Image (cartoon, rainbow, N blue to C red; front, top):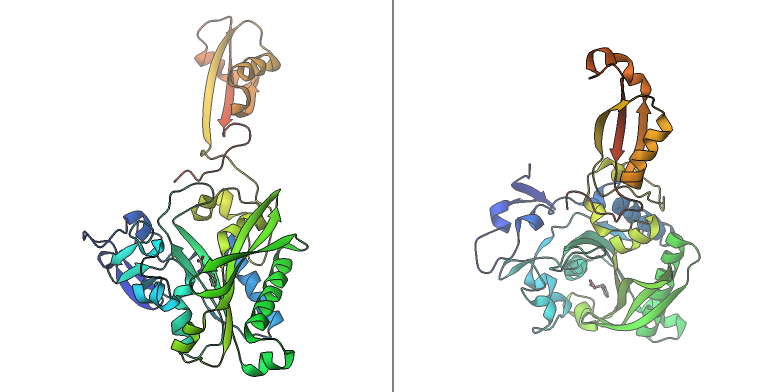
Length: 366
Ligand code: PHE
């Protein structure tokens, strides 16, 4: 049963407030049901385990200086999501094709950067914001329209960079790279990584960090030195800052060997029971994408019967699709009442089928 009134970041929201028959609304039911799930706040879920591991790195490296937010409402204004972080008026990410609009002024946040400005205005200078983010996108093993991000933000004062003799931007960029390389080592151990120059409307310079994993370069985060305009508008004229946004599913897929992004949403115990609080990087063991299906089949065989012969016949037809096969001649004990003819023997075969070979993983519900 889907709750029709949700409490999100201390705000009560009714389903009708989010899903409406209104031309300026494009939020389907399937997305509404994800609001309030907050996988990142579950200590036994890979996304929550990863969040906590990143928290530990920041607490240890910066003596608990980073303020943490993981319960900010994902329904934000267009101003928060786009204007406040300088996303141009004609940027594709603003389109109804890319973003979920609740009405023409309100969206489901498409990144945790939507909270930068308000937190700066409230006086925070070191913060981490974790939350569910929403982007209209087609679904496959690495894309899902709801995922989780963690935003990091650090403000520097002139006393921080002046002694270095560096200019403020270079100082912040260098500190940012050191911080994130340290985080990558904390999570992955020794890994090969590389920085790629890129563009974001809210940072300059902007970078992406890629990690070499299973013979591929994998983009794990975007970051950069915050545009001065954002600091100026929010009461930090004489400061410089860096920001990053990392995709938690991407990192968790690598850390836990989770092959399909849809698995994060499954309630199948074969998934959920594999992870526990504080256990980073336990390797996921795959299971069939189909639920188990048990069948009892009875055979009546003329004359003599050997278990191996029967199993061979079944295997010859069904192959590895049959996970387990128990041919029990014992079952023939009650053949008195069942057997159709005096010279026939009954044997029972229990089969359970659980997918073929190495399954492609997809939770059954999706
Ligand atoms: N908000 C960016 C994204 O979602 C990531 C980012 C955050 C980049 C902060 C730079 C600074 O892709």
